Length: 378
Image 1 (cartoon, rainbow, N blue to C red):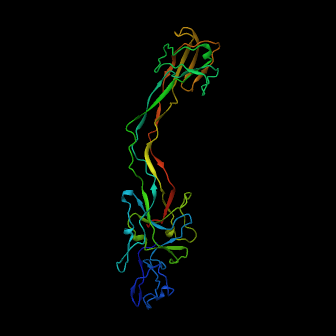
Image 2 (image 1 turned 60 degrees about the vertical axis):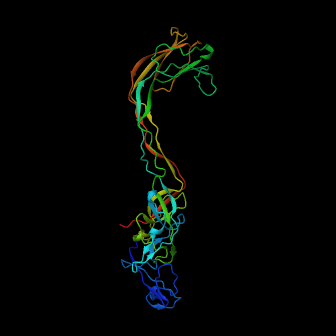
Image 3 (image 1 turned 90 degrees about the vertical axis):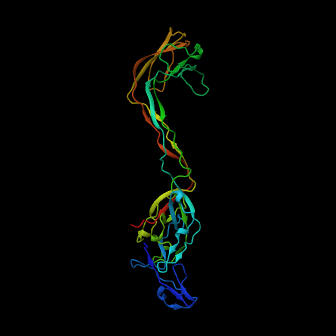
């Protein structure tokens, strides 16, 4: 990894010229650095790292060539959108020998995308009302002998009033031709409800963003022919928030390249930073409140049906409990239906368990872009 680097001056008769990687060489190697040459003759000079190793002719960052599914290496900034740079100006670097400021050759930052935000907005607290052992609230008579209630089936509601206590009720009167079977709902229920405020709105735009500045990337300047030179883009000279990275061009890419063979791991874009989406819209949401019916409870009742409206001429009775979706009864003989009553066998409700109220962002995603960067220096 390039720390700070020393480079060699090359002079022309017309005056002093600073030559770095990317300038075409007329004289071949860097052996002519420091000698006077003709005006038209430019010399490519070797760059030496502080640790004494050669950086080839690259005054910048040598990196391994990325796979074809990634874009050209760039300098990428990630962080909150409010702090995102609006230009590439801060990427200018300084000549360590002359203190000359060398501008970064790049356009305005290119927006790469937005990362999924952390769902940390507020949500209501879910709870359950009750539970209670409630007598059936749904009673439906059918002209068919199968309690069928599909679309178009000849059924007639015969519901008792809300909060029915089992006393005699007459929801209506059905003639024998209207009453061939009857379905009666279960007894026990849990009612979910929410305590607290609705989810608090997220900011208009949340989650970290990634923007990039694309500078010059040259081949054949680094010691390894498989490497490319990111000119004027040294690792240690980047402002905070910037890194050497590559961005996927293929939405199916899920992993970053890893060092293979003799590749220098410090020069491979192996660190998976995040997945960014080019068109990401998020709104706050919460999972709905619900109640899990208790496993241990006893809510059993007898429901009686009568031919008349005064609960005096009983047709049949049926035992119903909380575990059933509904009970279907087919009378033995043809009769009318005029009234209902019920009594409890066991009224011992358990405890309903609430669930829900978990925060999450509702997300509309665009194309995913995987961001892979050089490993951070220790």
